[in-house]
Length: 385
Ligand code: FUC
Image: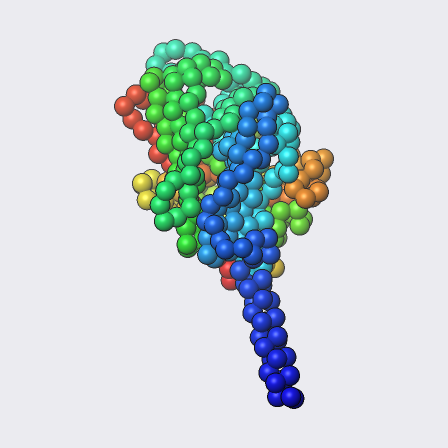
């Protein structure tokens, strides 16, 4: 009798520790059912009555990515920490109406047609002047008030061994003041190597500027857990673009050496944000990456968070990266699960071409011409240490 009972208890213990191991290392807390790599549900309906779908991608490493067709945006990115516990590492909202609000600071969004500021919304292309809507006075910002981050994209899960969703959109000639009919796509793929691959393409029937970026705000300790000033950042960038008094790149490209913008060695984001330094408020600055532009993504940034051990490498095919430390967040937006996002609650690492390139002949061109295809790949690769 006694040995049988002992065996029974041993068995219970073994099952319990297996369950604890599974929960602890595989982030199964939410979905213990057999794993579907990709699922679709309804996220909401826009104010004008358009259905917005949500896609959930999972991999065997315990990562979960949620994407919505509104703005082809990332709403959730859950990643294991060094103990295998998952946290959602991107800022966002629970409700579609909050994403639609003009106060949405582009959480997780695909930004286009042209990311960042265009001075006073003006540019000249092939001798013709264009005036784009001014939505961040006196400038045009992130594709305009109804830019592609504020539209519902078509979504289609891709067949293949890896969970992937392709979002497409047709932006008509004159949309937000831009010339030409533009066909654009962004495909998100989750790999078995803890990578989220983001691939953009675009074609147009007239010459037009194109510069997409991904606007996720990362907090590797978990969204809503506090600020990112203790995160450690390394940028593969020896040069940056100084800003003029209107916060626009002046056109100069200067070395980061001996400035508070030198992240060539791993450095805490907050280490040089001080009243006496030039970085009083945080960073909102573009860097020229050292890697030669190529169709194979090269590492441009490494972000790590000491307490969780999470590490995120950013790889890109683009010539620049913008570092933005959520300087404009002020605790007045209601984040996911009731979180309050204060100043520096997240960090954006936006791979792209340089801001205002359309007015800077000295910067690499962002003009897409008929017959050409715009390509941009960005990879977020996660690990722990
Ligand atoms: C980033 C910044 C901008 C702006 C926006 C919400 O891309 O470069 O300054 O505040 O996000």
